Image 1 (cartoon, rainbow, N blue to C red):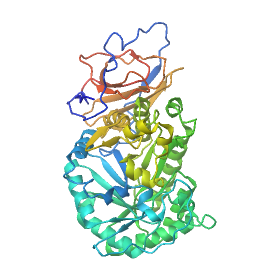
Image 2: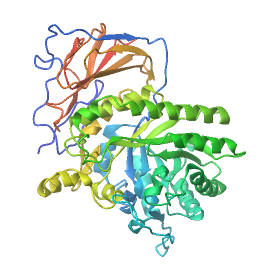
Image 3: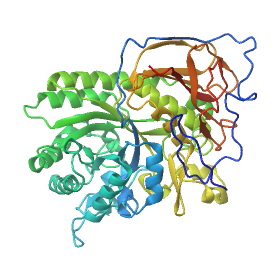
Image 4: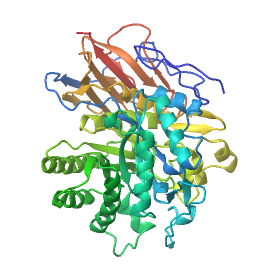
Length: 515
């Protein structure tokens, strides 16, 4: 396959290296085939309220999530890994890398070559969960290389500490080294905050006794490590509970924190979100991931309320962040997580979270080997493919950036992230949007320049969205030949024009005149 260059924004061109580049581009909206005739379609209604400021979207809203197991290969997050650095920089100039995942609770700090892993009790685990037998070392060299990688990309880091198979002392030793190597962001370093444990609400599946495990016991163990860390790092801050999307844990965690006379500094409340799964689930289809999901609203409402309670108790503003998520859990589903539909989903989901006040979102990815390790050593999506096809397919299926040999490839999800990234630094304002029978969403914000931007995402397979937004011109547009295509284009129009229709399966940015 050839390599193409893509126009990524209306302001500047950038390259997005890809081995899965498109053979033919979907027609842009300013072409005869890309802009269907309005016909007799009823226009959607869209009313903007730019004078009513909402949440500000941080410059580092866009983020990626990787398994801690990637650190077992110190050359991966390294200043020498120029291909991966190029992809990170093309995705966002100021992103946040979250290191965690299932494997964060079986990795151990190995400060010297002779250091031994901690003795832990191995028990039978549910199929598809990481076993303590997969324990791997994290070395000082890996952390030093991580610092160089972050310097080269311009990104910062949320760093996961093992809770599942760790000791407070070893946690404090690792945190001390990481803080010294990366430096805290409040001191112009690269470390945003620590997270202790990954999806503790699911520990009963593989790391704790399900009969006794609870949010209260989790907080006992979490505080033991957090207190050990802040005893040597008084300025350390933490994100928690990092659940797999279990709103019931927020109240217990906040209640416990508010009961403490000297609680650890909470940098963010965090949770994960996957639409559903596993890959074998027949419900996980393109149409399903593009349909509205009430769980997004439920999670947002619950974590926003918990953050408000904690903010009032601490007399400060506690943000909230989605730190791990994607389309289909357990590595993604071929034909759903790795095609254009996933790009439209990502664009819509990220802008939805931004409009609900999230400080950021980290979509999960990485290399097939280490995501496979996080699932017990196997990617279930491979079972849906013939062996020959599975061997050639980018892994894991939902990753925004895939590693193929020595190259790094921009996958479909990353295009949705790029689209949403145009809102970074903007201030959201409310809109009234009625798309009628069309499966479409819209978002609006004011950029730091004072210019307004509107995103319209038509996720409908067949229906054109008819829209009337005078004095707004077309900006970058996300298109592909079909929802199941991997040949994706994010491109600005060749001429300045207003838009009256948005074609099926198309996302477009519209800009007001500059103030």
